[in-house]
Amino acid sequence: MTAAVLSVRDLSVRFRMRGDRHVAAVTGASFDLAAGECLALVGESGCGKSVLASALLGLLPGNAQTAGSATVDGLELLGADERTLARSVRGRRVALVPQSPAAHLTPVRTVGAQLEETLRALTATPRRELRRAAVAAAERAAFPASHLDRYPHELSGGLAQRAATALALIGDAPLLLADEPTTGLDRDLVNRTVDELRRHTDDGATGRALLMITHDLAAAERIADRVAVMYAGRIVEIAEARTFFGEPGPLHPYARGLLAALPERDFTPIPGMPPELGDLPDGCAFAARCDRATGLCATRPDFASGLACHHPAAVPGERSAAHA
Amino acid sequence: MLELDTITAGYDRLRPVVREVSLTLAPGEAVGLLGPSGCGKSTLAKVAALLHRPYAGRVVIDGEPARGWRHTAPRAQRTAIGVVFQQPRMSADPRLPLRDLIAEPLRATGRRDEVPARVGELADTVGLTGELLGRRPHEVSDGQLQRACLARALVLRPRWLICDEMTAMLDASTTAALVAVVEEYRAAEGAGLLAVGHDSILLERWCDRTVHWQTPPTD
Image (cartoon, chains in turn purple, yellow):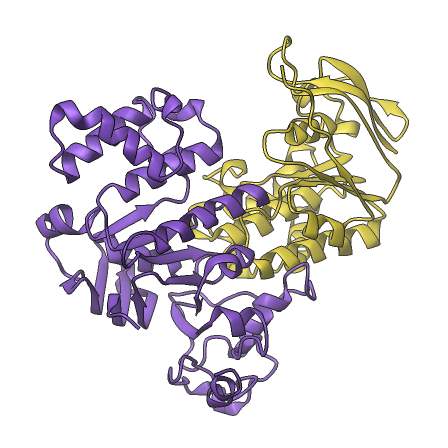
């Protein structure tokens, strides 16, 4: 495997609240992501996925405290000052494909004008070359050049998504961060959007690293190499997509429950709701909803071999042996 | 019966998005309406919910033709239909704690005395615990807010439910949980359902039958 583009070690984000309370949005997240690889980060809404993304872009609100480390291309992102973030991280090392492109694009300027502005800011394109470079940038994201003079509200959902992707690709960042890129799109459009993201991951000599944050398991299955499952602020399982969606399936009971809830599978919900991030139990956060829980689950399971569970569906070692 | 009879509707009289569409739901029946985004299925759902006046055609609710739309719809017809929209954040008053959000239809129809019992019962049904009921929309997740919006749609015990992409923003487990709540309610009250969406796997699993929207001719 090539060297990691993104390396996250023991990343934690806590929000200081009124009355000396804390909300532990992300706790102890560790993973690596290589060029040409797609990692899907999945979990219920409110589990801390988007906070993790914001931490990587230095976009956390003022009451956030971070711990651990996250490096992209060798540059430490946590605690980086605003100048570093603005000049060498956002757009250049980490590019964001936003959740709702219609809200991300500037409504009063055409797509072409926004591409040219981003080109001026991120590259040394001479002024007279800007229009040609904008056409080329649009082309990379399959955005039709004939629509460059349109305003965001004149675009369909799919084209707006491509315009936002074109903007994200301009800085040639080694890490693409897609935060719920398919929310609210219909299935055909979801497939087209994630296929295009996959293409950008494979593009070029070494490709890009793609971290896709999503609650859409079908989209994750379609393009991810690996899947990370987040529950109550912690990554509870990281697995190869092939074994996660196929055989033998996920090992963590929460991940199994999430897959079983799909309408093409059992269509049965996981009982109960996730705990509040401001009031997490000392032990396993999923124990209260888990049918495998025992007294042991009052202590927190360590994250080892890609899994944090006392009673997994199978032993992690056996899985890799059986599917090596 | 909930009958949509040759409905033509839209936002520009010269270019209606729904043209002469008819659809009939039998009492207690669950019908899934499938179509790509932008095909007009949400507009038809709004017409069926008496929230959008069609240019032509009739809506007949349990034998009674609709006589008004939005606030001019007669109360008996308006309250016979419960609606859940795609985006809970855009369909919840940000100032109301979830408890009041769920109770609002009872208050608006002069049934305040039923509030404590009915809200408590529904909060249990949709899985919202006591402390969450005191929070405002910005203090809860999309999934929790949609649970409250579903409870609000059920609070007046409607005979018809219209769910327009109710689960498009939600994860798999919350989706399955909310569909289970709807089905439990329908089994108990014999209510009919029009579920609008683009996920054929979901709607075919959920509904008695599905209708595929025929793309209208574009001109």
